[in-house]
Image (cartoon, rainbow over all chains, first blue to last red; front, top):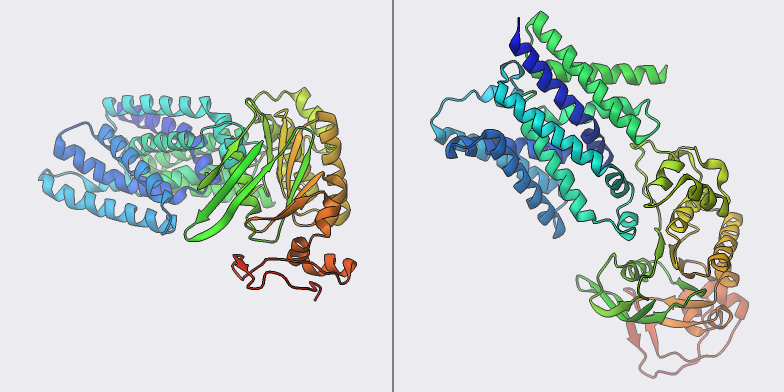
Length: 259
Length: 252
């Protein structure tokens, strides 16, 4: 019956699955603002993609990776606090994106990029998301223990022979992939919420890092299903509905824990 | 491990100047000094976590180093048990984890959450983690931080025992010479440069040590006569004395 629903659900669930473990690292490493910065810069990536007539996902992944590298370099020469640097990059790239979009001349649906348009996911977009999602999960699983080690204590990890810089870059690359994948679903303004709300909800019950990651994926999936249902029955915007559902699950989990 | 002429600057501030010493197998070397003396910086340079501006660090080839950082900044956001934490060390099996825990006397906390440990327990877990690397050299940055006085003495005894059993070298940073006295072979008194070094008894009566740690040390020594050719200004820089010799009383 409704092909578009199946595509939307597939894309949404894939995203929830990736956001679980990745979101845990965002929460553990206090990188929420970093996620925002990457997400905001995605709009610039879209504008460049349209201007240069290349695949949008590809241009977003490329631009996010460049921004991530820029951050690593800028953080090295201290002088400004990293939240200031992030703020500068986030907002100037968002503004740059909006300005560049006005040059493209094409009429694009800005709202769809800012707040997501899950129900209009095409087959090729779905394939991109599945491919990107599997790649991201694969990287996270393969490096799981090493990423945990650098998150717990960077110096211990370094002494034990891990290449901390390379692992940090890897985490940022995964993040860039996920941002590119999720802009269509919840929109670039809401991506970070899907990364941090499910892990925060899962933290209430998790006893190990793995439980927390898996729990976040499940909670994220419930949020996607809940948000899509709300959108279907009450005609609410899909992306924001998913985030609202996630927030409700967080409140529920926190209340249950207290009780 | 041999350090030669290590110097480190941060901005225009000299943190370390011309620091040299060796550590041999089975030897415990303790670095003491006031806050800001560069103790932690020195340890980080020795571990290769920081690059010195001058001088060199040479290690015996294939040297396995176990490191215990000053404090594990634990984010409460990650739920993790002691067993899982120790399991992150490459090559750690459950059997080796149990052995390392019993060696540091912390078998009981294997399944506890890392966040529920007391200061002393956490330090022992960190020590166990360093032991899992089967180290030939242990580097301990203020191993007794956050531990009460009784626990501190126990921890130092434990470190001595580990040295005896593993025949490894130990480089340790501490605030307080009196507690580490019996547990150390060599003391290096650091305040950006090596003020004095030697056996603990020897160092505790050294004028440079007394100047750094004045009160408690000097009280026991009462008045005595010595020479020194420099003192430290507020930033810790060495200021040469004009006359270079004087009779001093370092007690307040």
